[in-house]
Every structure is written in structure tokens, then in C-alpha cells.
Length: 323
Ligand code: UDP
Image 1 (tube, rainbow, N blue to C red):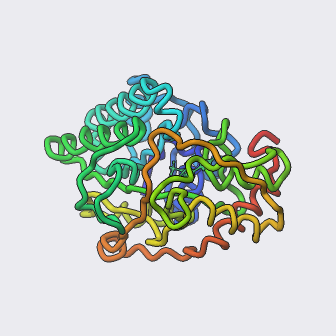
Image 2 (cartoon, rainbow, N blue to C red):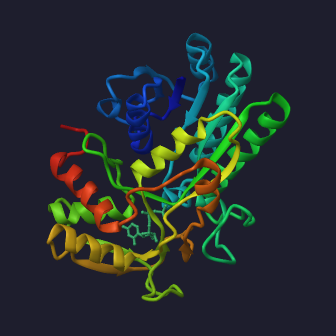
């Protein structure tokens, strides 16, 4: 199948592209390289540099390539940053998605798989979280992804574009070739591993006064390879709608740091800080729908294994993709 991957030079996009190529698909990566990295693009994929904020970039790419499906990862992703400087999140994430859908209508592409997030739910009134929960985001990042879902739903209803919303919990881990290298880094596991590598002095824990077993936030950490697999399954004709992707196990921030200490053998000093704006107390997935409808079968649920894969990648790439 011919597939255009928007944001295919980013973290989840690079691994999904790798697995699509492994499965024999014909992949075109479309990325502006603002936060993605050219070396993260699988050499088996065709690379096109372009920016979703410029309508003509994506329209001309889709008209030239005529993919049967688009997988859309291109977005700003940091919750904390979105609460400090919100408008670029609406411009990049929402306008970019609007331009993508407009170009899909113009080019006749009928299938979209969208990288959505559990942050669209806000604080849930029950855990684990299934897809029937109301979506009430508490961060600009989550709101921007929810607005995209709404635009896509209208594209589906009126233009018949089949849309799949994959609502990720916390993506982490690495393959041998591709890993997490954001600049600046804001995610917990890569930051903790930077401490173990000696490029960061200590890890800050954002908030110790949440109503959880040790006072720190609970998240559901899911291996990037398992996430990528869900995108491949979602390509199947007839698959549409929202799917939560997580393991169903919640770990506190302190527990994650402890797992990283065991895997790396490093003491990893930690310091308490106030809460980070936009963070929910606990987010844990009920992925029953993905398992039954997509046939999703996560293979790497063990957090030590996930951290170990990230640790191996970070040790092999101490400067991320810069070297
Ligand atoms: N976190 C933290 N220190 C950091 C980065 C993150 O305590 O330096 C916490 C953050 O407040 C959240 C959890 O770790 O409770 C996961 O955050 P991350 O940014 O990795 O993912 P998010 O859940 O925001 O998508």
C-alpha cells in the first residue's frame, strides 16, 4: 500500500515508517524537519521536505504521490510548553491538520490515521479509561488534538474519508535504529536517562501532592513498537473511530525513576518541584477496543524492557541524531 507519513522524521513517525517498510509498504515521509531529524527517516522511504502550515506544500505532495492513506504525526507535543506559549500549538497542530484534510479532499485520499492522545480526555472520572469517556482537555496540547479530531470527523462525514484516531498514552522505548530525541527534551524517561548518561545533573519531579500512592502523577507507558503496530493494523479498510493505546498499567513518576535506576545502575538524583501546569493526576488506558477491533497485541508491556530499549538507544546515540 502507498502511504504518506506526515511527521515521519519524528519519534513515533520514524519507528512507524521503519515498521511500514518492514511490512513491504511503499512509504513517503513528509516532514518539515523543525523538530524531526533527517537521519531518523528510514532510507527505504522517499523523503519530501514540507510544512503542513503551508497549504501548497501538502497539496502538491498528495497530488504528486497519490497515496492510498495518510498517517499524521506532525505536531507540537509538549504539554508544559503548550501552557506557556499556546498559539503555536493551534497554528501548527490545528491549521496544519486542516490543511492536510483540505489536501486529502483535493487529492481523493480516503484514509487517515491520526496521532491523537489521552490528553484529549482531561482528568477522567474513572480508570482505566475507555473511549466512551467525555473529552475535556486540560491543556492546550490536548485541546489542539481534540480540535483536529473534530475537523477530521466532519471530513469523514461529508467527504467519506475514513478516519482512525489513535489516542496514545505515554509513548516510550526505542528500536535499535530509532529513538526519542526531542530538543529541548521534555519527556520523563529520556530526561531521566540523560541524568544516567551524565548530560543532566538531576531529574525534577513535578508535583508530589497528587492523590496517588506516592503523591506523583500516574501514567501508562507504552512501547513505541507496539504503538507503531497499531497504525499498521488501522490501515485495514473498514477500520474507523477512536482507539486508546496503552498497557493498562499505571506507574508513578517515582516508580519510573526507580525502574530507570535499576536498568542503568545509576543513582539518578531527583528533586521535588511544584506541579507542572496542564498535568492530570492519573491516566491509564483500557485498550480492550484496540485489542478486539484492531487485533492489537502489545508485545513489550514490561516497563524495564521498555526503559532498557531506550537506554540502549541513548547509549548508542549519546547526542541523539546530532552525531
Ligand atoms: N515529569 C516530571 N519531570 C520531568 C518530566 C516529566 O516529573 O522532568 C512528569 C510529568 O509531570 C508527568 C509525567 O512525568 O506527570 C510524564 O510526563 P511526560 O512529559 O513524559 O509525558 P505527558 O504525560 O506529559 O505526555
